[in-house]
Image 1 (tube, one colour):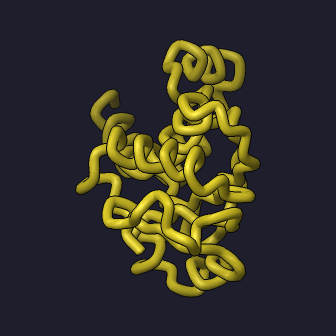
Image 2 (cartoon, rainbow, N blue to C red):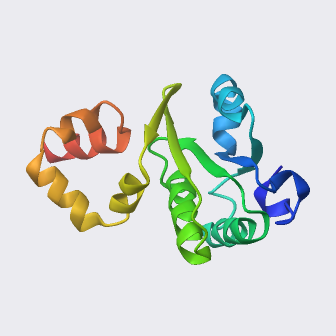
Length: 158
């Protein structure tokens, strides 16, 4: 079900384990998507096409009306649009004041990596990210393995 087209009181959502997945996870990594979907009600969206405020609002309403047991989020690592899914879940919980366990996953080259809600919160604050780079500059070497934009920017400097 697409989250934008889902009724917040839909019976399958009540007290359910919910997977909120980016459409690209479903399309690019069907085996990962299938594994994460097991035992969960699946909601999908494309954060590039659907505003994060819509997703956050829908999730907050789902939390208040259907009280899911947990929410699992899956997105593509490195996508600025997909990041918004994770931030939307944290924000929906904050706004609704409904404490719901969450799991956050990113998919990198077909590998599923769990991240903490705290990592999502820190990522929203660029000055804290800057502090992380300053205290652990070797992280930029790791970034070079994944980010084409970073590689391009480094070439421009030389």
